[in-house]
Image (cartoon, rainbow, N blue to C red; front, side):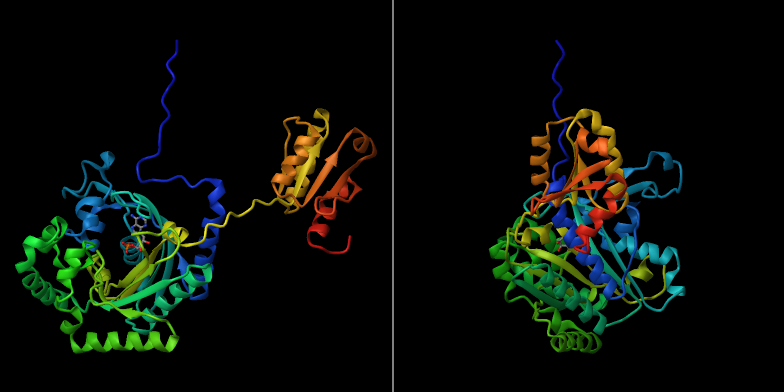
Length: 436
Ligand code: AMP
C-alpha cells in the first residue's frame, strides 16, 4: 500500500496571502504608490538578496537584526572569491534602506541629481519570534529622500505618512518624534545612560542586561514594566544635543505644527538600527487587532550612511511601514468579488462558442468568467450571482442557430438578443451606462 505523504507547510512566521485577502493588500499598496507619486517619489526595485556585509555595515553589528535575526547563507558558487570571510555570504534583506543606499551609491545617482526621492515596496525577512503583527517574512513600503538635510523634508515625510494612514481609515494613531543628534551626541549619551542604568542592573530584565552591555540605548525600548519604570528618570538624549542639532529638532517640531501634524516628543524613542541620526519618528496605532506590535511605521534621518557605504556625504531620511500591521489596524471589511460578465453555454456542444465570446469581451477590456466544464445552466447562473456578475451572456442551440446570444442584465433581470459580432461593444456600452 502506498504511504500517504504528509503535506508540506509554509515556513514558520511566513504567510500566504490568499485571493480572498488580496483586495485589502491592493488597496494599501495603491494608496502608497499614489501618495508617494504625488510627493515626487519614484519607485526603485532592488534585489531581495544582498551581500551580508551591506547590513553589517549599515544596520550595525550589535543590533538585534544583525546579531540574531538575519537569514544568511553561503553562496556556494562564489566560495572561492574575495578573500574576506563575509565576501561570499549573502543575506535575505531585513529592511529596505541599506539596499536603496547601496543602489544610490553604485549607480552614482548623487552625480546626476541634487535631491533623489525613491519609494519601494516588497518582502523583508527577520528571524524574530512570530506573534500577531510580527512575522519572519513581512512586507514593507518605504520612502528614501537623499540630498536634503531637512528639517522641512523630515516634517513633510511624517505629515505624508500620517495623511496616508488616515486616508486609508487607520484610526487612533500617535506620531512620536525624537532627535538622536550626531554620532558624537549618541556616544556621549550612551556613556551617560550606561552609568545611570548600571546601579539598577540586577533589577533589569535579562534582555536589558544584555543590551546594557551591547547597546544601552535599546534598554529604553524595553517592554518590561520594571525596565520602563527604571527608565522614567533616565537622562534624556535631548539634553545632549549640540546647538545645531537642537535647532534642527525645534524647526522640525515647528514645521509639523505649521502643517497641523499632531505629534508627541518622546525622548525615549530610539529604534533598533544604528544608522539613524537627528530626526527619528514612529507612528503607533491603537485600534483594530494590532495588540502589542503597534508600530505601524518607523523612520528617521541617516546622514552618515551614504558615506559609510562608499558614497559622498549626502544627508538623507527615510521610513518604512509594515503592510501587515496596517491591515491589522484597519477594519476587516470583506471586499466582495465582482466581475463584469459571466458567459454561460447551455450545452456542452457550445463550449467553443463560449470560448470565443470570452475572448472577445476580455479583449474589449471587460472582466469575464465562464464555466466551460459543461455544468447545468442553473449552476452556472448561481455562480454568476456568487461572483457578483453585472451581466450574463447566455448562448443555447437556438441562439447559436440565429447567430446571437442573450445579454442579460443581472440586476434588472432583463435580457435581449445581441449578434455575436456586436456582443463586446454592446456589453461595454451598458457597463459604461451609455446609450444602448
Ligand atoms: P523597522 O524597519 O524596524 O524600522 O520597521 C518599520 C516597520 O516595519 C515597523 O513599524 C513595522 O510596521 C514593520 N515591521 C518591522 N518588523 C516587522 C515584523 N517582524 N513583522 C511585521 N512587520 C514588521
